[in-house]
Amino acid sequence: QVQLVESGAGLVQAGGSLQLSCVTSRSIFNSNTMAWYRQAPGKERERVAQITGGGFTYYADSVKGRFTISKDNAKNTVYLQMSSLRPEDSAIYYCNTGPRAFTSWGQGTQVTVAS
Image (cartoon, rainbow, N blue to C red; front, side, top):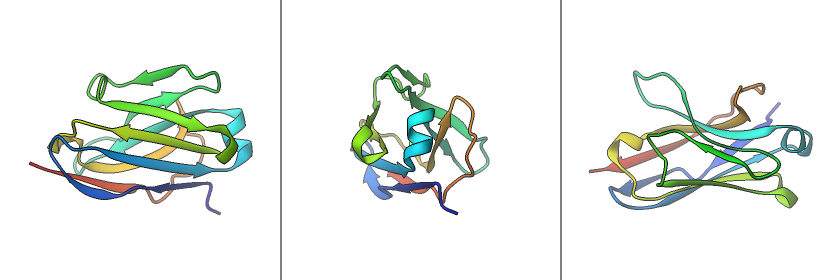
């Protein structure tokens, strides 16, 4: 049972940009705040951004000013626009509910930033 499908994996040069997408079900999308998480090798999974149904956003300090979370209600889709990317942003990115992840994790999408 796939509840969350992330896409947008890519290799980008430092300073570049990339957009990730997450498609979920209408029931999950309409009932929850949605968030993006990431996990790098040897690191704990961290919440980097989230957006409520009303459009209120949260960003981790590490990405604030560089990442933008948005959503398309008609498509049950959450986006993460990333700019000014740094090598330390390299990780597998996942979407889920926020601020707590209630849904089983999807496959994630790999973001690699080359220095």
